[in-house]
Length: 285
Picture 1 (cartoon, helix red, strand yellow):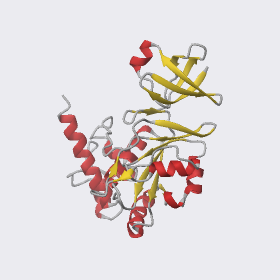
Picture 2: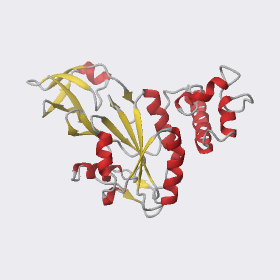
Picture 3: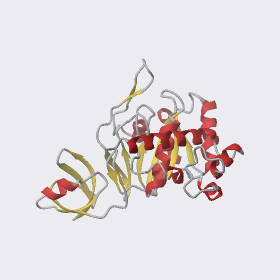
Picture 4: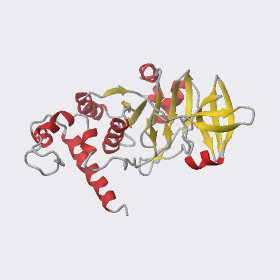
């Protein structure tokens, strides 16, 4: 039979096929290759053994998941404060693996001014933005439309409301909601395993473990500018083909920044990501 891996604990894989769930083990070589949530696999339903992994459309190393069609980047307006650096990493990574990304701003009642500031930056670039208040179920109807016929990953810091949004979609508590530390207003990580939750046929959502970093080490520092999608139209204006868009005088991106065509916050985050990638490249060995 052929099915989709929707979860795994240790060496036990949970597979959904033809509306039924199966618990399977994997043959030795497949264990070594690494089966991840989202994989389409061929398995023997009598022996409950996975025999083959189908070719992946895409693969994310951290958190490990495959064959997604969109990343839902969740921010909160406040508590925890919106982390636009992580958001820009996630958006760049979505561009890199070639999937759609949608931005959700949750807890919109806590800081309406900040919500508008964030919307202005990312709507001008062309990203779809959804405003929600997960606890009050505001925005869930629009979210359901966004999820339709997609395999979506919810990504964002702990405490932003990913689990509450998921529970609202399903109308029941399918994930344990995170807690906000009163001491530092940052989220405490509660989700530990990646799991796919089925909404309809070929329509799933994944809650990923809360994390405070998002590694995009597959992208080289010299290439990261390509995945800031508003930068692309200005890159041909650079004098040099190998322009890094950092200090070069005749740089199309820096010129667009000076003319107000590129958001300063996005450019500053690009610089931070570039320097971080470059530093890790230099200290890799």
